[in-house]
Image (tube, rainbow, N blue to C red):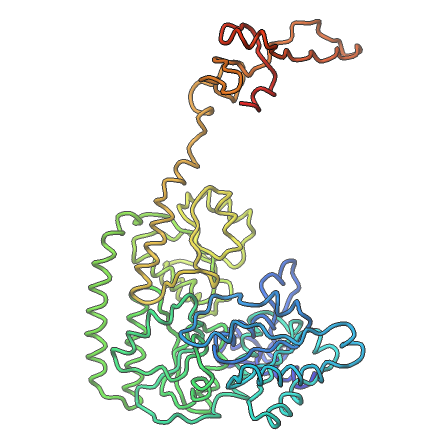
Length: 538
């Protein structure tokens, strides 16, 4: 199994569809992709995490993690992938290996029993079994167990060999695509085919984004035959080999899957995005053009242009209400992948100024698009330390930070709004409708009066300060406990002898406590009334 995993990783690294790989020499290509060890790199996810988040949106499948409890516990539901049907994908299944299981060699038997229990309890169309660091290191052969379970129970059991130590989350995405190619795609034939069948690869229906663009396909008569893997069903993925065109949304994650579908089944693919008005329109045009080239009726192009004209007119009219409220605002975009250019395009359509964009996890094609959109590469950066991000926000006079959750505290420290555009977000921003949702989110953030109040100086820092305090305003009103008014909270200045450096400090004076007789005098009491204890009582 170890040799098979090494061979699979080497095959994934030698990817002709990857621009980075194409630019390497033959010797560099044999070495594979570098996996440098850098502090904090594990926070971005391991190979197991990448495989799990790529496959978990297949909603009717049971996802069984062969590992100690923490692997599934820490990786469960990391993405807000939404489902229009089954909720089985949100149930965490794990073999929960213990030290006794590992020492005594019970791992494979426990995995077989777990597969049987899952099938008996939930009857899923398939079970995906994930290997992890521990089970790969002790040599558990999940391929053999899955094969035996498939023969015994009649339910496809798909091994996903992506242990965490194999590499990064991005490598895990690709290994997940290999698992689909090896064990799922091509195993079921569709009941019927149409010339308008397409695949959408790399969209995970985060917060329901796929649902914002699917009505556009429905109006054009285009059927999403294989959704990989947003709101997908096992049967859909298995029939993906009969599509006519593939749209690749996130090229860095599953480029190997799109390219091999082209090699094996002759399904051409293109890269596109549903973020922003122009990018959504371009994606629809490209898809319709490729479908016509593959045999669809030419009238599809006319219907596509009519749909685009109608939707663009509606969305631009709706955006005019918000444009004056966000136009001219400066944005720092810290995300990655295809969003490094697609969100930039969407923001520029709103009249906003992008002072910088991250190109983490971006391909060479993504970087070229950023340069084309921004007319320069001066505002592109890979990783940015929090202190550098804070400095850029301050020096450039940014109005809002748009990033993932791990960067939100930098925005809070800089006292500026933050909008979540990463995979953890709770609002969908895809398609024409998503553009309106995005500008609403930005408007709510940058025009919230709370930020103005937060940046304004405190009342005691503006104008004259309270005499003798330096920072506290004078107390006004009547204390509800002592009924005393105009009470000064400032201790009287020390009038005793001043100690010399060699002399011991004199004992601190004991604060005067108001007696019952003093309190009876009420406001007529003169001098320093009380210590800070009375302030606490008040």
